[in-house]
Amino acid sequence: MNDKVNAQSIIVANRRARALSLRVKGWSLAEIGTELEYGGQRPDIQAGVDIQRALTESREARQDAADSYREMELARLDSLILKVNEILERRHYIYREGEWLAIDGEKVIDDAIALQAIDRLEKLSASRRKLLGLDAPTMVQTTGVHLVIEGVDMDALS
Image 1 (tube, rainbow, N blue to C red):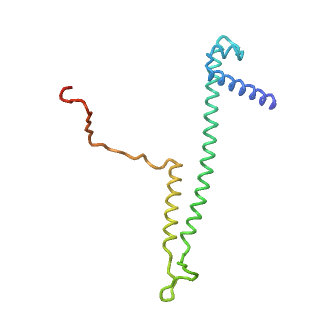
Image 2 (image 1 turned 60 degrees about the vertical axis):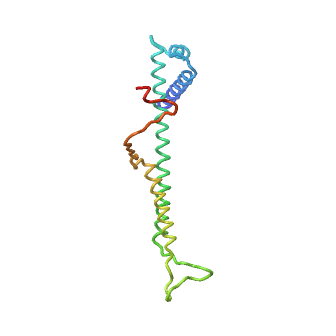
Image 3 (image 1 turned 45 degrees about the vertical axis):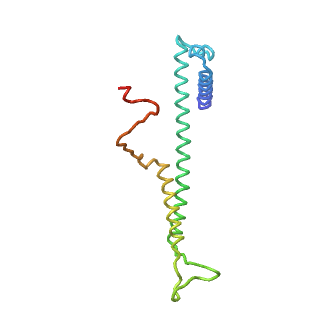
């Protein structure tokens, strides 16, 4: 029984793909219905239904692929964020000309590395927010527009 269902599903999927392909080529629904030998009184309607189902399945497949890609990118960004946080939590000292820079015997902390890590964290966070669609669109407000058309006497138009 399962093999029969799978075979039927394959036949239907192929028929829908063929119907969609013919529609893209400009065939009418009636021509597609005749070509693919849809039974019944209105093969054009059956062809239309198959084409709509093919488009829906295609959209769903693309959405599934997009969701998988989004999840993969989020995992990658989360991993990078963890690594940057590890770098940020460590102490970094200034090392110049083969020795540690020290003042009164105390190593001098290198804030530049922490600042670079913060910058990278901000970029990763922006990528993550963009991927998730969390940033609100920027609102732009205009106060007025002054239009000048060269070579046209505006007083003559009124």
